Amino acid sequence: MKQNSLIEKRNHGTPDFPFHIYSHKDINGNYYVSHHWHNEFELLYFEYGKMELYANQNNIIFSDGDIYLVNSKQLHSLSGKTKSMHHAIVFNGEMLGFSLYDKCQNDILIPFIEGKFIFSNNYSKTQKENIQCILKEIIDINRKNPNDLLLIKIKL
Image (cartoon, rainbow, N blue to C red; front, top):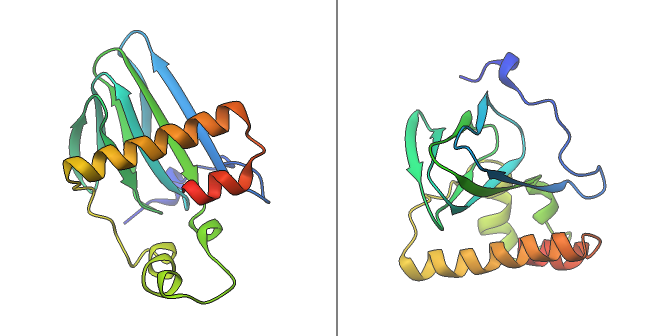
């Protein structure tokens, strides 16, 4: 059960585009974010180094190229173990929805937004490489042209 005192009160993005990328280069290996949760999803991409994530009542060590999706309202924390670079792509799941019904919306997006469709975070090598490529594109688009909202949404 999540404690209300651990809810993160920070706004991620803007009301009309609830999306933000937090990129952090840790040159000392002492990065730390305490236990918290939020209504948004958080897609973590560990570019290099070793970091430890607490999620789902487990501690998981991540290294070069690893990815992890923190679900909405999931208690989590993150700490550095070595020099590292990671990106946290935080977004409101509702921004993925469409006003027109389709099978993808019904079978995947609505259950995902409602927290009923949980991704396993177990990816094949090919899936991981494809996701890494997309995440790098999102980070690059956000860095070069953060107003290209449609392209960012398409990539998500």
